Length: 469
Image (cartoon, rainbow, N blue to C red; front, side):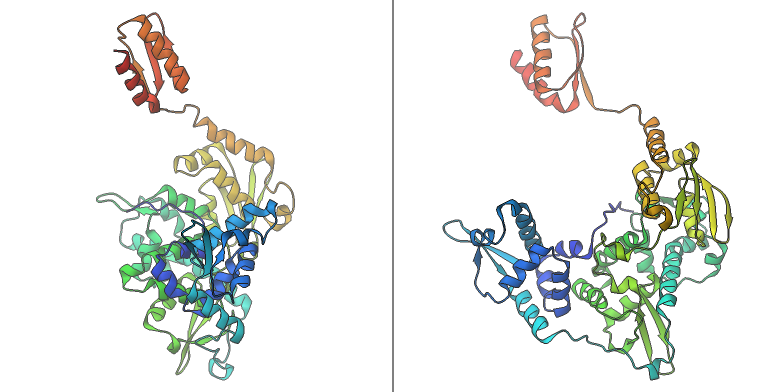
């Protein structure tokens, strides 16, 4: 199973990595153009709106005059972002002067959107057809429950396959989740396990380092990892990537809690909406004649940046100076995640009590979790009562977590090369002096003419010694 580096990004960072042809095809969707505009930094937005009705290229020198001299770094960052998203196209004339102009497709469709407004391809269904819809509170609870089931579903299936007895992920499976049937498609299962679980021949499945880190991420970051993998593997499942991204961003313009007819969806969107329902992004309901989907906040916030705190849930963890930990949660999944780095002592219906110990942290460090990831998890999930304090996690606890990690990393291994049997003392001393000049000198024994140099300086030392001969 290939290792996938988990890097939290927002939707537009992923979109910017698409090929130019796919990105241009996405700009035919007015909602996508609006979503891109909303995601841009303030300076980038200003440039787009200034050039929206300019059909010619604008020189880079002229654009520099639009900002104050001390804001040049913001100007450069704004231009780079616009070029990454192909909102701007760059041209160089014979005099080697650079000019920028708006992408024609983006310019045309953004004009239409601002002048005429956007119209979704589907309207909310009337209440006479849908009867009673869930409240926003019920939708939030549904989304959270579905996400926890989704985290455990791939591991439940491995359990039923009889391959999970020795796997660490067995801790994530509790009786209520095992008894609940899972409706994950095989492709969605592979997306969830991609880079998180190793499944080698004749070996029990194991959690990778990225898998442990994934469990410590906050829900919004975990969701983004899964969505990125889902989109990046869509072509292998016969789905058009551009259509899938367009649909996901269009979902962010839907109204949370409203019902939308399933018959308005294309074949690709029909497949995607069922997968999204397993993640808690939408809720599917069936009437007598019609079926519909109801977007949750997870779907309507898809185009929101990860740095937007409004999309995050309230925390539930309280850490005391005596290393005791109290988690006000009814989730068994939370309990198992906390078990990654602390000793769980007992669990009440709405309270998990544990302690951060040296032994529990050593287990976490052996599994590839770092002290900074543990501290960040505790800070991000701090209970509102302690989150208002500074710091949210006691300093003596964070300092001790870092110290216990350094206990395991007292010796740092670096590649080095050992030289001996120099033909003369003059050549030996010249080699020592040359190693010092390079900054690669580590150790010498002048009596036996022995020298140790940093590994990255080996080629330079060989060339030097050849010249001496």
